[in-house]
Amino acid sequence: MFVNGIHLEEYARLEYGRLLWRVPAYRERLLRHWHDPRHPHAERFAEREVEVARILESPKDSDAALDAELRQRNLSLRAVIKEIPSVFGSFFE
Amino acid sequence: MPRRELKSGKQVADWLAELGAQLKSPGNLTLIGSAALLWHANERGIGSELPEASMDVDPVTDSDEVAMHCYEALIGSEFERTHGWHVNLMPETVLNELPAGWQSRATQRQIGKLNLFVPAPEDLLAPKLKRNEPRDRVHAEWAKRVGLIG
Figure 1 (cartoon, chains in turn red, blue):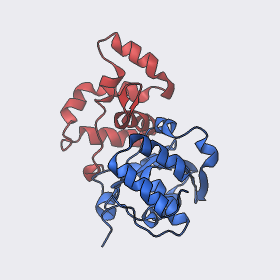
Figure 2 (tube, one colour; figure 1 turned 30 degrees about the vertical axis):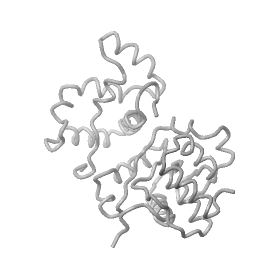
Figure 3 (cartoon, rainbow over the protein chains, first blue to last red; figure 1 turned 60 degrees about the vertical axis):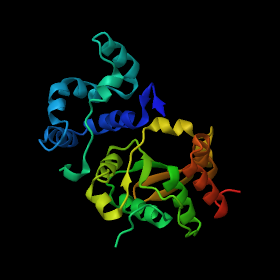
């Protein structure tokens, strides 16, 4: 199943990432987790943090505009959503 | 010894009771998938276990507090180690897969500050039967056998 061409499970990371990014303490917790050296994608996240943060800060109804803007820079909303790291319950402290 | 899979409606009801008791602010949660079928079974006093047991619960929420609690129960979490299953938040769009008008047929319950919505069994089974994988057919047959659907 897809949402605007984006796999449902991946879109969930954007939808709930946006929701939780609005809570400052939780945003800090996510950032700590994604920068944690134990996180397998920590280095990759560090390289793409600015773009990931930008889509997580974006309003819920901004997907089309965001995608159009990203495409002007040879990116896409789908591509940046894939860069939102997973949360690993085993060390989400 | 904790159950290692999600087989009984009591497991779902217990989790929802725990979640409702933890919330500090009112929050909505819509439960879908096989866990929702199990919840209906528990509500009707049906103790029959779900064949082809599930490994997760699929909720949808618009509440940051509910979402935070669900994140504590992600795959690999302490919650999963204790319960044997995990919580897999689904995007709101997934509700579009349910038949039109499902909201009017859904069951609503207040559990502490948790406002729970569970679509009717027939509506829960519609996307499963559309997908029509063997496991989906087994769940539909179970729902019929235990009397969740006519």
